[in-house]
Length: 122
Image (tube, rainbow, N blue to C red):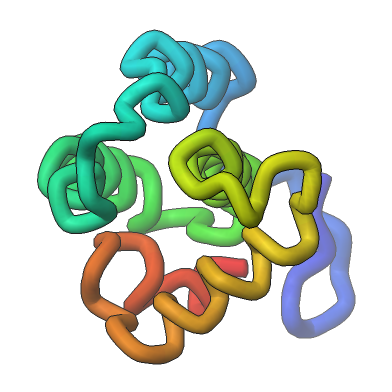
């Protein structure tokens, strides 16, 4: 049951990302082992991930975009882990890597597909 705008509880179907679909996408991201690609620049990582992210957002984001929040955050965590492995100054300093990634997100909001629309989805 869901509560409609008029306050009445109705039995409706809400199209959303299933747990298995979200897990499958996260597993694909994990299988890429981005954190081991320390020789790549962030632009190359974006080229690798963007087609997958765009397709996933277009497919699942139409009906219930907020349901994708956890999966989009998984991508962010993977990028932070990549930064921590690539740059010595971030090793063991997750917060510093988060700030660095945040500064790149502000400077280049269209680098990753989910960055330009992230706050509208979350």
